[in-house]
Length: 187
Length: 187
Image (cartoon, rainbow over all chains, first blue to last red; front, side, top):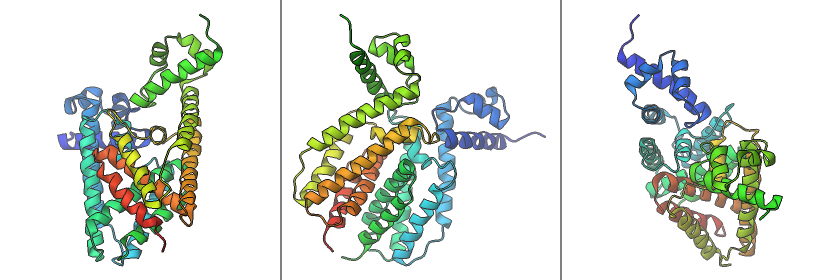
């Protein structure tokens, strides 16, 4: 059965996504991606000029999916309950077997010395979109200065994810939630 | 002139340190380290069984140096001034040319799927020591519950470093400092 070019692309991006998230962006080879997608390397290179282009395409695809999921996330509209729920969801995610940190954070670290890499711009836009999403949700919960508070929330979520990866200890997310609740309180 | 085994070790660790910090832990090869240290690969393997062992030794050495530097850091003892100074020093560090994030954070991310790697335990101990150092300094500034507040400070410093790496924007450290000052205030 013939596959459309779109289907072939999806096969490649799904295979790349799985491998990149499991092993990191640097360690995965085009051979591994071809093997997992059950395609030839020639087919891969017809669609993506290089592994770097494939990393960028995989992240762009992942960002679109992740931002779509954020829009549909159910969060309480009560301020404190919203924050507790947000950090609890992050802690649950971090507790998954073989969790290896936030994918967009990871790609930035792995490509830390390659500022011009196309994946860096995608990660930047993704994190800015997450921060804007926090601001929207805080505004819905009637938090004042929602954009300033959103910046504090993303500082705490990034910190909590990193410290959970380092220590394997969920209490960092709980401490972050407590700090966030104090920060969004009216003063 | 003959070198002592200690001098040879230092040569190797200095070379490895420079390369790892510049290019990340995964991309550097034993060949590159040998070339930079002006030693043969045989000499390297006489001292370190594997690149993984060398990563661990390099990090243990770097942790010792970094924790020694922390002890001698001058910080104001006034609470708010101390926090401003701490985050300003982090932002200055992040503004250095080719800064590529905190080294211990980076190694954890690069080895995210290798929980048993010896470098992970060293990074964990290092971050715990930094958190304890924050608690000591906060206690000197008469902040109450210094260990709880230290955990919030490390959440904010990790978040700020990551977001500065992502966005190249120092205002994340400034926002983190403002949040930290609100969190350490008496309530």
